[in-house]
Length: 123
Image (cartoon, rainbow, N blue to C red; front, side):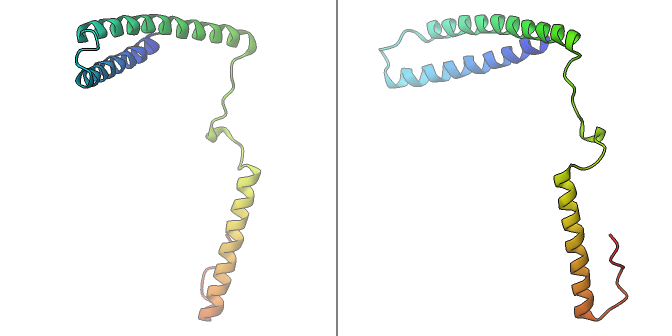
């Protein structure tokens, strides 16, 4: 609840500054066609206040419903990379390809230099 409130308050501040800058730009283009700047900012502030209240309420309701459903279903299980038992099949194929390429490069280097004292082909 608190995090959503702070997020929406920051978003509201950005929106208010954007509305003010936009209003000043429109005022420079058409000086007498728009109402006063304070009127526009008061309306924008009212809309932002409603957005903060409704957004915080909706996010709180969403968190409550998620917690309620997690209580009955056991929640969402997240697999962290450290918890995996081994590489995925695609990663294993890539690792084998890299190992074969490395061994082939070592054999070619040994054949070109005629040096048999390089490290063994074991990876």
